[in-house]
Image (cartoon, rainbow, N blue to C red; front, side, top):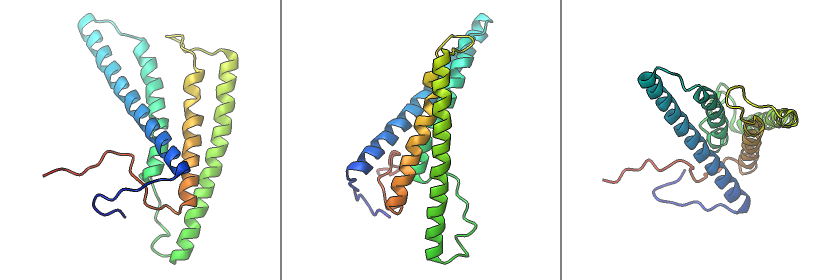
Amino acid sequence: MLKGNEKITLKWPGFAIYWIVKVQLWLAVCAAALMVLLVFTASLIRYFFYAPWSPTEELVGFLFYSSCFLCLPATTWEARHIQISLFDNVLPIPLRAALKNLAALCLIIMLGVLVIYGLENAVFTHSLGARSEMTKMALYPWMFVMPFSLGSMAIVECYLMVNKHQDLPSILPSKETKP
């Protein structure tokens, strides 16, 4: 663990992964903020003009989808995802490490399969020229969010597995308060 104001420096692959994940997290935050702004604006329009602003419902759905997937690599980097610690208390330490590596490998394989199917789906959507129902927006850019995010999540998990989950710099803002 880090003590005080220690800084961690990452070498090339870790540095690049860190910044890709950080940019994805900020994109997720921006998508969520825009989603809230759209819902608030649509509510005001409905309240004052008694008419729905129908494109917002569709766009809010796309933004929610995007923000959910874009923050997954950051939760993996920060190890803030759901973990099952059923065996952590009863297994010896070397077996725990092997089990963590096996779990990481299973996750990476599953993410790889999801990326392949997600890319196929996005390419197929692009080839059809599919558009959304109300706003007629092209669907394929939204469809590429999932494979991109899950692919970067797999890269983060590979990096963590290779580096034995060492101390990493946090992506999240510091919680330290100044007296």
